[in-house]
Length: 395
Ligand code: NZQ
Ligand code: ZN
Image (cartoon, rainbow, N blue to C red; front, side, top):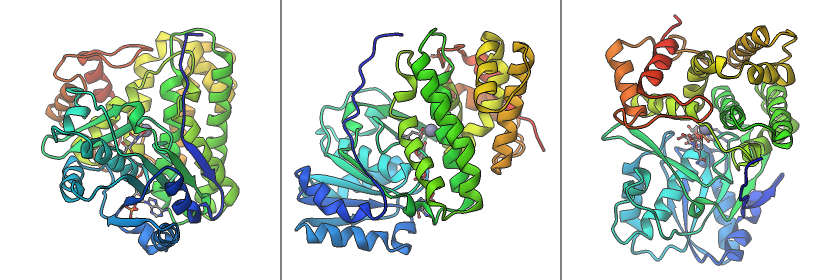
């Protein structure tokens, strides 16, 4: 087990009706002038936004509202929000929504406290942020794990680049998690969310660092839970047990717990971000398109690892590692298909791409041939291109 520091300071308020505690939670963190951020309308339509603002008023807080965050949230929206609220003495950000709203709030917080006013610099690693406005969240979809993660992911529409920034400053002060808030999710979003949760653990599971039995066991239990409850949530959107399990897995999958002692790989996320940045596809779907091709490319690095995943999570029974590892990849693909998700470009809304587009994706992912991705089996520009080429199949 490698040395690690584990610090997840986010207070979790989990369960039915916890959103009514929003005002008290903000006040306990010292907030008085609160900017509430929201998505494209689901929180308003469900009545959640009203309940939250009433709770802020009951706690004696002043609030402002910025609606309209889109999935794959944009730098342009972040910059406009910073311009609008720079002089309003905002001292707390409350994100009501999914990963896109939370990440927007995180970026706005960094931007509001940046004297140079160029928040994108933080996402291109040109500069490090020194301060932020504290934020909390009310989560409405089990997916990105942003509610306890140190990461924010933003898309620069002008350049079609999607970039993430990890910093302890991004950790929310609290996460309000009421599984009932996810009952209204369309099936597609439930499925994309479940895939993202799986992938946060899988992008940590594949590692060359030996040992780490505790971390492996936690990871496998979490993966089994998602595999069990995602179909249940799709069948019965109002199933509290299924929604609770998915919601809690979403946080635990991306707060580093399932990667302790071995670090992360995150190749599939890097490959997927290029698809979302260029074509706007939902994050979860970008991952299910890329995972099978990535897995086929790197399987020979450690067939035993794939075999273990297959046996412990996906019901693979083959005794020999080579056969079990291949069966594992097939079983993961079948699971994604059963959720209605694409497993290659051809089965996705993007469709089969011409070679020039694959080259552009590989150039973006390798940052113009300047980096390799991953740690399990590092992929340079050529390796990345081959994975995109392999994913370019299907209908
Ligand atoms: O905008 P509204 O109307 O709210 O609709 C949203 C949106 O269309 C809808 N939705 C959310 N909750 C709902 C609901 N519809 C009905 N009922 C509800 N209760 O779902 C759609 C997707 O929302 P979004 O916030 O985009 O989903 P998600 O949580 O999957 O976030 C995806 C974003 O997070 C980033 C992704 O790259 C992507 O940009 N990620 C952030 C991470 C982080 N900060 O740690 C890590 C992840 O790996 C990921 O990269
Ligand atoms: Zn993700």
